[in-house]
Image (cartoon, rainbow over all chains, first blue to last red):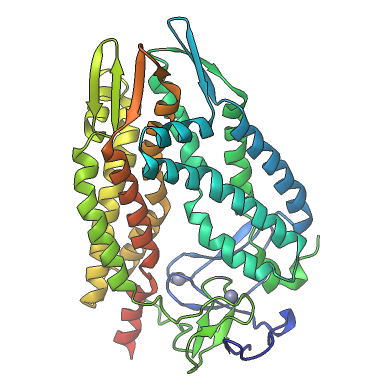
Length: 213
Length: 209
Ligand SMILES: [Zn+2]
Ligand SMILES: [Zn+2]
């Protein structure tokens, strides 16, 4: 069993082989023996039912192409207009970034910053950090994973997608709506990010024997 | 039904909150995880005081968030300022019940549920309640899951501002309530992040010992 290290107490003392087959429930601290589980299933705590660990269908070799594809979709979602609006012969479209700039210009910097951080900055940093995590495997992966886990609760693309739907329903009464490429890109991005989040590198460190294809 | 359960703490172990690695407890100050170099603590530091500080700040901002307009519309028909509630009322009376219900859920019900639940959980741990452990654990899990969806209204306002920008015909601007509401959402997420659900279960151990 690895000892906790203290600051500069020395080199990494735990290789994968020395990891004990133990897992503590993150929500109630109950201790469980780690058993191999089938692909696509989750292990749950016997006391409180929290998810202890999961065994994803995704392998690191699937992740790199998936992340690169998602980055492309992310670019399309941010560069093209989400919708064009037509009112009395006037036509006006907006990108997500255009909305953020409009908010900023009219003096709502806090709201603009909030929207930019949760829908553009953090999802992008998340994707890039995951890419770096997989490309530097296993060297700095654990450090990068700690970083990704800390920022993940603040990326809110799926909530934004629902916001797009609500806005369109709202506006459909007063204007003609022409969907833009970014609308479909955001829908695809929502699904792709949900798939990426299901990949948990912890399970690969803890079950090295299970990591193969 | 309660099963006497061996916990990491009773076994003299600590799990890294970042990567899950289970390590031996140590007397050293400021211990670090050997795998990810993250800070390892038996329980989140000052969980109750940090959660209640965020909670109080969120509760205070909840008032301007609901009283101030979050969206201002100026069109040929005149100017109109909408609070969260008047926006929902508008949808309700214009027949969009589904939309009204969705925004009511995300903007009114979820923030209230979060404020109430975190207050209840902090009090229950502070006063060492030993009952309804499972119910309280489930409540915590529910607010962790639905909390982020409160941002819905902020995104709707942002999109309306970006889209409805026809000079002389109709222009929508964000109101001062939007920043307050955004802050409430952020603060309630911080409050539930600082609350350590293991504190709920620690009571069971204390009763067994
Ligand atoms: Zn548990
Ligand atoms: Zn760790």
